Image (cartoon, rainbow, N blue to C red; front, side, top):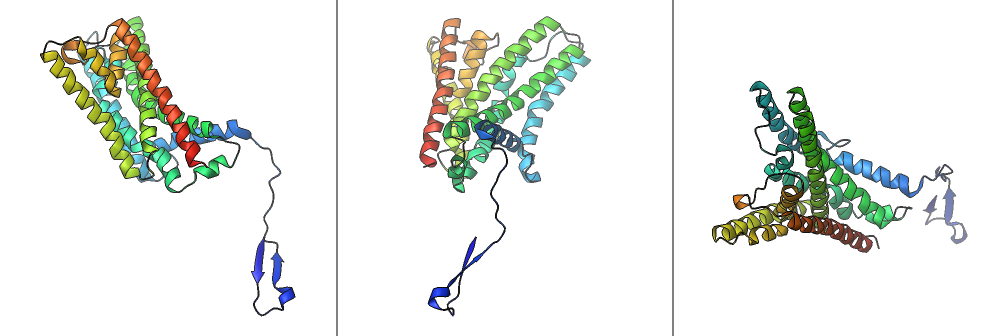
Amino acid sequence: MAVEHSPAAPPGDQTRIHDIGYRGYDGPRLGRSYARRSLYSQSLRGSYGLGRSVKSKVLPMLLFAVMCVPAAIMVAVAVMTKAHDLPLAHAYTRWAIVMQAVISLYVASQAPQSVSRDLRFKTVPLYFSRPIETADYVLAKFAALASALFILTGGPLLVMYLGTLLAKMGFAHETKQFAQGLVSVALLSLLFAGIGLVIAAVTPRRGFGIAAVIAVLIISYGAVSTLQAIAFHQDNTGAVPWIGLFSPVTLIDGVQSALLGGGSSFPGGVGPSSGQGAVYVLVTLGVIAACYGLLVRRYKKVGL
């Protein structure tokens, strides 16, 4: 409906009402669950540039290839040499740790993409003007990035598993290790997604978000690894597992080495014991829950 003012018209005849075709919506209201699923699907697709420009697809697809191609080469070498196991020991649980720099770069590029634009263009209150609530928005974004990370980290494990089956390696042994690897990367996906989104949600500037995520994930790993090496060389091996609690990468490393049959990248292979592994799991789950809570509080403020 539009109002037109005419300065030349008499005082009592200054407004005119025009019908410009707006209509009310009389169709079905699909509610919160549909809105949550739609936001999840759109965010997951956006994490790989689907439905966006070609430029947006380049980096995520390139990083996915970087994760999978070396795994395929390793399997090809094992098949050609008729090996009875993969060249990398504990390959299913170790692969994400070996490739942690690639995973960190993916999180740094996609976490700000997922949330920073909504903050920058102030569209968050528009989401909350509909049946969707703060928890729905956070859950959809969290689940979408975690799913994207699970695809990124689980893809090479699937390549290795299928390759070992084609090479007729032990089915039961490979299946068990594959399952353990999936549990490990599922925890990693949840942890990295939560940390990345919390950092990215602090600022609407995507560049700042990328730099901050890289700093937290990579610098923390470097600092913790350095402290562990110092403790190990000073014969304080008991401190090595506890220091590992202070970096996301070493947290996952500790969980998979203590409880999932994986090897440890800690100095001297001094990984946590089973009891310490339980502490690692509790800390990991606690960080994931804390990230979710922080995101809900952040978006309650933004949506006001």
